[in-house]
Image 1 (cartoon, rainbow, N blue to C red):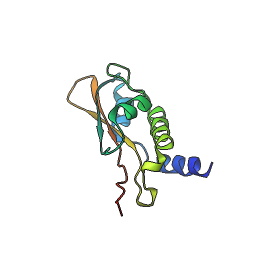
Image 2: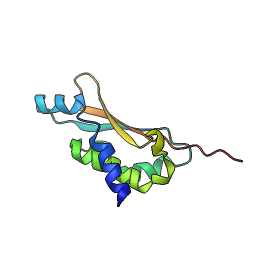
Image 3: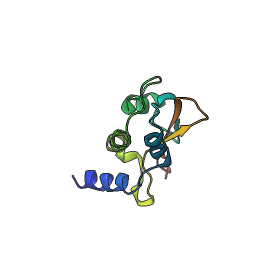
Image 4: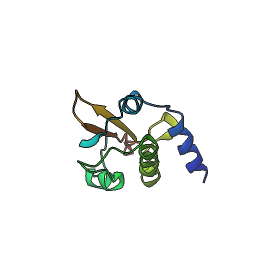
Length: 116
């Protein structure tokens, strides 16, 4: 239970991102285009994408839904991250030009365990 509270606090401490504010101002509907996973060394991309539950062509979820998805990723793979240094999965949305499709980047900074 404590881990859930800590993870929720970490997610809420970020504040709003400019992409969501811009989407709210323009009332434009965005769709998921490319999905990129960065930083995973041991965990396969397919497992992360399965937990993400975002698919190309799908409408872009709200900010709260994306934060909940980050929390689900962290809860599922919590042993892969070192919270002492602030390592946790994050989802970034990048919009290009006037396209309705956005690129979703999942940053998955796994802890690399050293062999002794």
